[in-house]
Image (cartoon, rainbow, N blue to C red; front, side, top):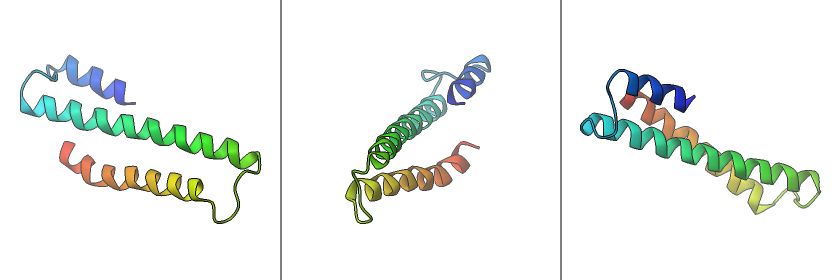
Length: 84
C-alpha cells in the first residue's frame, strides 16, 4: 500500500528532495511503514511462540507486542490527518 502511494506521489512530482512537504511526507510514511512491519514481525513471533505454549496469561512478550501495535495505531490516527 505504501509503495503505491509513493509511486503516485512521485508520478505527480513529489519526491523526498522536492521540498519540505515531500521530505516530510516520505519520512513520516516511511517511518510508519517501518514500525508497522516491525509490529507485524513481533506479532508473528508471539503467535508462533504462543502456539508452542511458551506463554501464560501474564506473559510480558504478549503484552509488549499488543502495546506496541496499539502505539502504531494511535500514531497513525494523528499522522493521517496531517498528510491528508
